[in-house]
Length: 173
Image 1 (tube, one colour):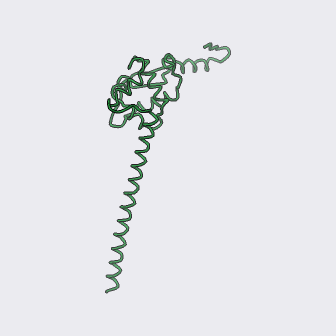
Image 2 (tube, rainbow, N blue to C red):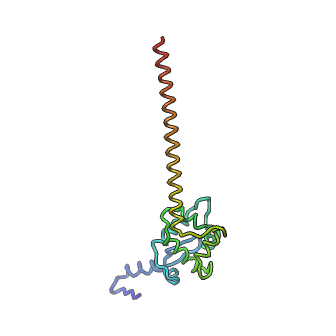
Image 3 (tube, rainbow, N blue to C red):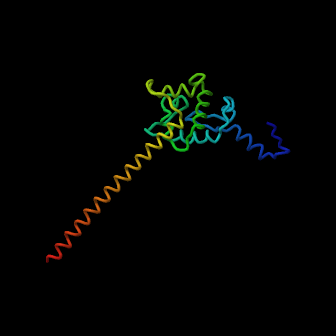
């Protein structure tokens, strides 16, 4: 790309060069620039930023990744499906990172999924896993709400019973 200081100004040119050289995806100690991802035909930089944000913190189950190989070996697609702000496009970016690092061969994403699914279980799409996880959470919230209402009703009935007993005792005196 032609970046002319005379036309664009040195500040703009410096910003564009810095942006082009900076990492858009960080997975532990591994970082990927726009050029690295573009080398494997990946141009989804917002999804890369979302993936970086998710993988930079501790995942469910206390999993903390050190690098891309750790994600490939330790993190299952189902675990990532349970993470908010992470969709199929972010998963495609992860596949590009695997491909860039030479993990999983020609079909890196599929090899990763097969690695984490039992052989008797069919591989399903990431979207299906995401919806299944959301449905499980919705069911759990519904059950918790019903338990809470039941406890509240029982406590109310107990308080009413005590009040009636006190009123009856006061009337008898």
